[in-house]
Image (cartoon, rainbow, N blue to C red):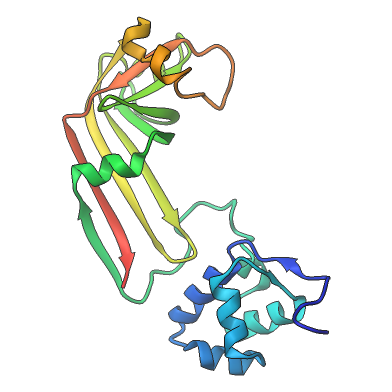
Length: 220
């Protein structure tokens, strides 16, 4: 069976998982290719370009890299993040405020945390960055709406399982309700964040942080 067989499997993030696992084991690309019975330039192609991987090559690489085919193909994507081993030479660095805001980009999913009369609460929300603030929409009477009037923490992160690296941004400040179109920015910015749960979400909450910190784990 050739490396380019039509019965190939979609690789997805396969190449980066192979490279990350190879580095964890301290193997060079040449050593890995030789043990897997393939040319080094073909392994480089698999590691660096979106491609498909033939079943035989997948099985050989999994054996050489002491892992499973499922792990190399991302079979753990529905599992909690952070299950991969640490990189061989990780570097933890602080992010400045400007870098933190840049990583939040315009919109995404973050977690808002605050204390209630009974217990601490941490909830995911769809947010939008708007004029130096975090804005999210929720329903009247919902748990995210109870953050209004409290000092809250808002956290966003990104994990790269294939390379065992990632970043997190933490913002702290008061949560307040905003009402008029001029405050929400609806005319200039469209409908704002779109909550994934759907339904009527007409309570707008704004967090204006007075503390912005972030950290990043890079691979050296």
